[in-house]
Image 1 (spheres, helix red, strand yellow):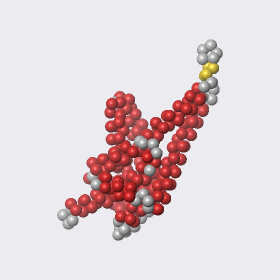
Image 2 (cartoon, helix red, strand yellow):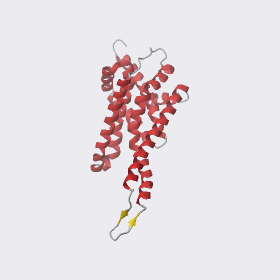
Image 3 (cartoon, one colour):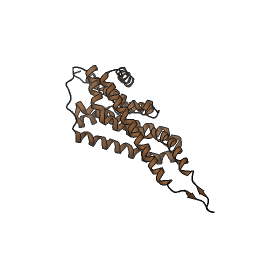
Image 4 (cartoon, one colour):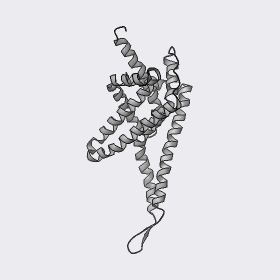
Length: 237
């Protein structure tokens, strides 16, 4: 089910509506990462604004250059972690458009969904983003004490959080907030597995640029597949 949803999402990559959202998502993702890097450089510039004076009067003037080059390496490493909250923002911004494109092609008989209100969408974005950032900051403590388990903690935790967010956003369009949460609980194992499979490519530079939009399409398909499963399993189905 998960892989079927993923490959159906990939098959729609040449859809003009899909590509429009994809390129905008990539642009915003790059802009967010550049903004983070610019902020990091600003901090480094402030730290290295004065030369370091050693005992005896000798001055170190190359410290700023070292920090500057080191910041590039650090940013590449941090991008692995930053892409998770960035993916959260991109999904919240574009999931409606992605889901509309998916449903127009694969589920054309469905009625249109009401648009999500600006305040409600902003609230969900801030809430999910805050949870992801807080969880990943706390996880760094676990990484220090359990370095052998760091990879499993990172993918397991972010897979759970991303899967929950993506699925609930996809389901809320047609189920409402309460029923979407109930549905997510009933299928939390499948959703967690799909979230982990999404978190994996988010840590691969360049590939991770298309994953937020591709993930939104995948979870839209997954939502409909789980609805179909429930309909088949119900007594009246």
